[in-house]
Length: 218
Image (cartoon, rainbow, N blue to C red; front, side, top):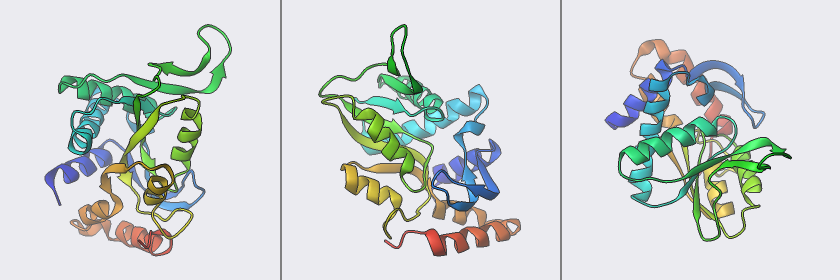
């Protein structure tokens, strides 16, 4: 495993973002592990998270000028931290996020921050993709921005789960909307990391059993 992947998984575990147990995903599936960006609680943690996303951004998109979009609520601090990390490495990009409820006073509207205009490309930064539900919700919200285009999505972890078909949710979203979905690590990286310590045997077995039923077949 590449060093940065191990470093990232260790970071997620130490920050309490990666948990093991019994959880229910947004898709409704019962899952044996959970990735929750909402457990990022300190300035140092959110700074580090932004740096990992920025590394992935530069690796996949280079110095591409795009607008970062962070879906409410967990995507908001992610978008801010990634924008800061990119800026510190010479790429100053705007960012924006949405409100859960449209504001009917003051400046009004559903979006806060930069408002993309026709011809601009948007990069969505999310925490995790399970069945693709959250990304589809974001695409519905962003559809009001005429002339803009979502060019990529970045997430912390690819869960490698099937979506509506036997394809992975990430592959389905890519096929549906025509953009790539990138992740810093995937669930098989997490399994490899856990297998290095015998005390993690039960968690590894539970994740593997889960993937045998819900894992993507292609």
